[in-house]
Picture (cartoon, rainbow, N blue to C red):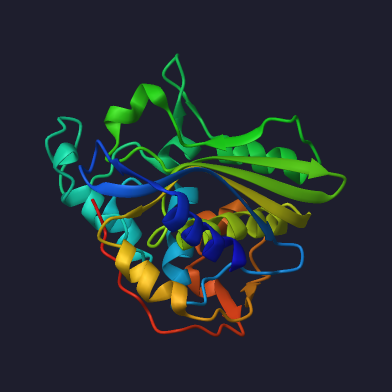
Length: 283
């Protein structure tokens, strides 16, 4: 929580106003943020100064790990965050590559599970990483990247959290996650949750001990229409202690994640929080 609150205050104190070229909205912005999450000691980075709907964030991560291509697929597992980008993003609605209602194109998990190679075949990045880690291999390139410059026009949104790099020291697993752009009031806690859960989940199915997540953000911003709410409401609240995360121990393989795992297999313990805050979302 201190990392999160310190960043919010830093943006307010030091940020510069930038007009985003895609959204045409003004953002108070800083460059370069480094967070750490202690997965080994189960310090789950859930926001306590407002209620965080963590199950939706986990459902979204599961959709990425399965390579979902449609907002309907995400909705079916309890995540509504892709509805607007699929169906209200005017640039995507005008894109000839869009296949119709709810289509997301080649976003996030599509790239992670079926990266198109020069010969027309596809590479499953996630499976390669899981297979290596399961037998104790770290080739210093246990990397899953969603950012494919050659196919950006084939998706409704460029990935914000774009690369996950796993590192193995003996039997302890670490994760470094890179994010190009971060909506701090609305999106950041989703990103924090997903980084933490990704390391915990991959460690569990590869029989490794989770260590820490290192979360690196390039552009962190608060939109103009979010600033007053952050400054006058959320930052005036006193945070509570962090909760812990429970993951169903029956989840043992990548196939489990692909087939039957749901957000109901994840729960938080001792989550105290303030009232929810509804921040505006900029498409």
